[in-house]
Amino acid sequence: MGDEAPRYSVFIEGETVDLCVPSEAAIEDGWADWFNDARTTRWLSQGIYPNHVEDQRSFLDSIRKRDRFAVLICGKGGGPLYGIISLSAIDWVARSAQISLVVGKPPPGRQLIQLEAMARVTEHAFQRMGLDRVWAGQAHPGLARWNQWLELLGYFTDGVLRRGFVKGRETVDNAVMIGCLVEDYEALKARRGGQFWPGNDVMLRLVKAMPKHGFAGRLAEFLERELPRYKAEIEAVERRIRDGEDEEAAPRRRLAGS
Image (tube, rainbow, N blue to C red; front, side, top):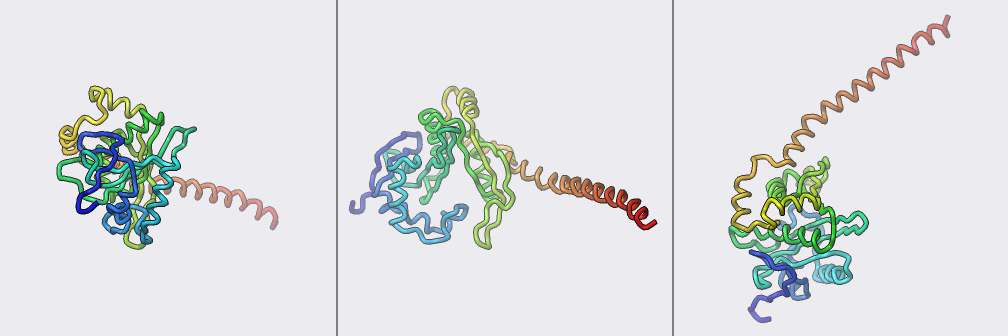
């Protein structure tokens, strides 16, 4: 290959990004090294143990066996290589899959490559694979900003997992489960004149104009406020039941001692 960056076979063509076929060349192009970088794995489950080239080859083999759908995130024309995006836990009965993305190389400024990659694979999941729901789990509030950007693609928070993201001693966050339903996708597409991805420039303006707090943040605030109140209600019920049982037992004790 010399000093020339490899070009990858394009599978899904986009506006600012092309999604390409994973290959052995990507492993040599830095794919395996991403998971050894502390900044890249900050909010991932990886990064606990070293990632080896052989590990990445095993992952590549699993893709070839159709255990999951995965494509490389590349610049236009199939390079350079920025990251990878995948659909796993594919359930053909429930018509659902988990989506995940890793970017190991910073993309050019003002190009929402990560967001467009999510849009293209989400559309592929609904249009080509016939799925009805695509979901993900994310640390919150660690990834709150990214989570809110995904709301522009129809991904909304389904629930909050308390202490759902724990990584060693330094990272303890809640996690949010987010999902996009096929009807969310279709509604967005209809609202945007038939285009799920309305263009990088439009998305830049939408990102800038988003509300201060996303739905995940509002749900987390609700949980923080309301859960202690509800716990107090349950405790009060338990006390009333316990006190009532004590009052009923008192006459029986007096009768037995008479």
